[in-house]
Image 1 (cartoon, rainbow, N blue to C red):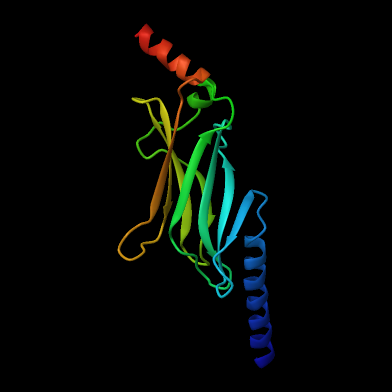
Image 2 (image 1 turned 120 degrees about the vertical axis):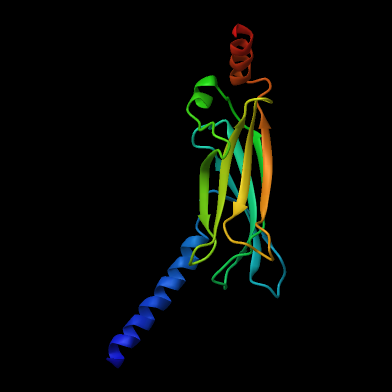
Length: 166
């Protein structure tokens, strides 16, 4: 029985180590800023290309605490047009008020996640990207928002022509 408990403990420890090692292995990681010599927390910056609208790239920064089981809830997002945005790309996206989840990243071993939703604002012909934590922090849900105007894109021209035809 004692031997079984020992192997279970070793297995759990190995899983925790693998979790933290794999967590730091992201091909999308474009920046890593140390918060100081006496802390295990760093600001990680990742690039995310929207899977449905590849002409949009978002940069997300959040604090990663290497030796903790959970990361702080706050994050920041900035999205820009980095390529072509076509009418066909926009035809495939969710147009509901809540938008569509385009990214999800675990921030703890249990239930806390960083999620990013894309929302299409038809009135201004813009894409809105909102990053939010799924866990309350000090009575608040942390979130950050960025917009990508479609002005000057093929998608914008198509939308204007469709509005004139109505």
